[in-house]
Amino acid sequence: MTLMDVAHDFAVVSILLIIGYFLRMKVKLFQNFFIPASIIGGLVGLLCGPQVLGAKTGISFTYSNSIDQWPGVMLAVTFACSFLGESMGKMTRQALAATFVGGVAHQTQAVLGMAIAFLFQATIPLGFGLIPLFSLYGGIGWSVPVATIYKENNYWIDAIPVAVTIATIGVVCGIVFGMVIINIGVRKGLVGNTYASINNLPEDVRTGYVRLDSREPIGYGVARTSSIDPFGLQLAIVGVVLACAILLRNFLISIDPFWNNLPLLSTSLICSGVLGFLIGKTPLAEHIDRQTIERISGVSLEFMITAAVATTSLEAFATYLIPILVISAVTIVGTTLVTFLFSKRWCRIDWFPSAVAQYGAYMGLLSTGLLLAKVVDPDHKTVAAETVAASCTLGYSYSLPYLLLMPMLVMANPKVVMIISAVLLVAFLIVGELIFRRKTVSPELNSETMEEESLSKV
Image 1 (cartoon, rainbow, N blue to C red):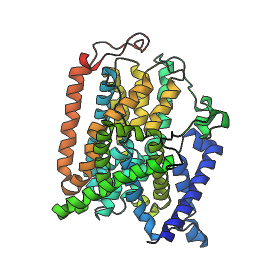
Image 2 (image 1 turned 180 degrees about the vertical axis):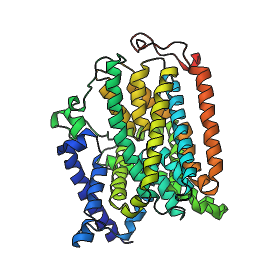
Image 3 (image 1 turned 90 degrees about the vertical axis):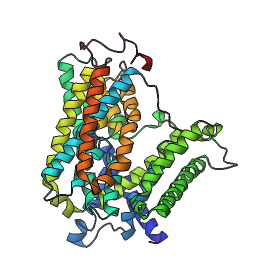
Image 4 (image 1 turned 90 degrees about the horizontal axis):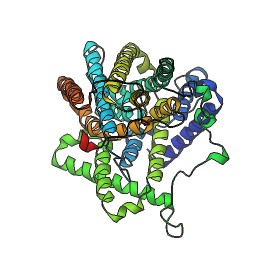
């Protein structure tokens, strides 16, 4: 790999991202399903790449051999940003109840995914069973890292296209089924004023384009340009986390060669958590602008997703089509059932709007959950948005250990992963029922009639 290879791939992926951006802005189909520009651009790159257009005409977008290394590096950058300047938020009873709903959804996806993998084990690797969990609950930003771990360890070479496909299915189904459920809720009187239709959403939400008079800053400078570019400072802070991650990985490898299997993105996430916590306790926290850090993470993720989709193996997609459809259908149905059932049983305030928002998040992206929260509660009269944001943040307590440990464990002993997942599912159910179950459920119970209870009342 040379710097010219990197420049070439960067140029091509940039073109694809711009194409995806304008297609999202102009094409109703993409607007209706809220397909991100990165996925649209990636699909354009796939269709106009060597596998489709190139095979027919000899003319296509081309990519260097080194583009296969993008996911590992770009995700290490994304994960390095995870906890810099981040706060855990307010731990109210509602937030904790929603976190347990998320835990049940998380473990349901793990158990169902592994069960289907065992069913198809003659034709697919058992690690396939974790892909729906990381594709739906985690989204494409987590499914690709897991697939990358499989690929880098020569466990499953075709994991990335499968992960991208299931993550895309999750996002689309989350939007479509979420809108259907919202309209059912309107007819049953579970919610009041809603947008009810995608076409009624604000234009910038649908098209992705923000007009001049509505634009907001993407971050705030903590330094003067006479000293250092503010964005450059934040990027350098991310680089320091990445440097610590590299040192930690090298140290572990020096202790035992086994850690060669540990990807850089895992140590990057660990270092981000440790350094983020330590910095947050010192005056150094003033030098981190969380909004800018999020933009760095977002840029890395956008380019990674576009490159991953554009270079997806169509042959691998065809090979695993039936398992993809079966495992997606089963986990989506399971996620839908447990999210709404246990939100109704455990969440005391605005259970239906909160369930809708959580459902969107557990089907692929927190942004999808926040979008559905906006649809079901356009006037922001419920705690739906706050609930889903808090549950996803607190949900790191169980989702991060899964991300760090389970991909490695499933390659060595998938039965242990299945047992652990089942035990944790039962644990979430029992604790949730004991602590959060309500004796009665009233659709009139909302944030206007009931105040939040503090953690001390749990």
